[in-house]
Image (cartoon, rainbow, N blue to C red; front, side):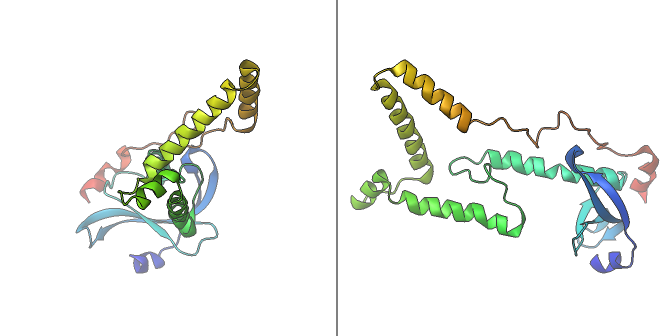
Length: 207
């Protein structure tokens, strides 16, 4: 496939990434027979400005326009974010962006570091020293969260002026730790593309 597209001239086009930022790309496309699939597919070679190699999108519906396929492919990130947000416990991936090849190792590295640190947790050490099954990372993280909340409440209750102390801490936390950031994954203010077949290309389905 790479050899086939090397002989074709690309077109330069500006696309909207998830209905937002404009990005210049080079595009080659063709409806060709893909041996691995044993069927005809709509193959799109896509390269961002500054990149050396093309990436390939393969569509099974031959009646879509290549621009609509590219727009739809850009939404893949939203799906990946949704899945990542639902991976609980150590959850490093939903707190920081981990792009590129190096980024794919960072979440794993952080997770392993947390695993090693939690070996020193009092509950974990007690289990290991008493030759009992080790606690899971998830349960230890939940224990730490609960202990932190209880310590926070205890500090307020035993203060000289609990009401004033609570208000003071609440203001501090909201000012320094609560941020209202604009979401990149919600599409409420972004234009949606045309994610369906084009009438003018219906005949391509029978080619």
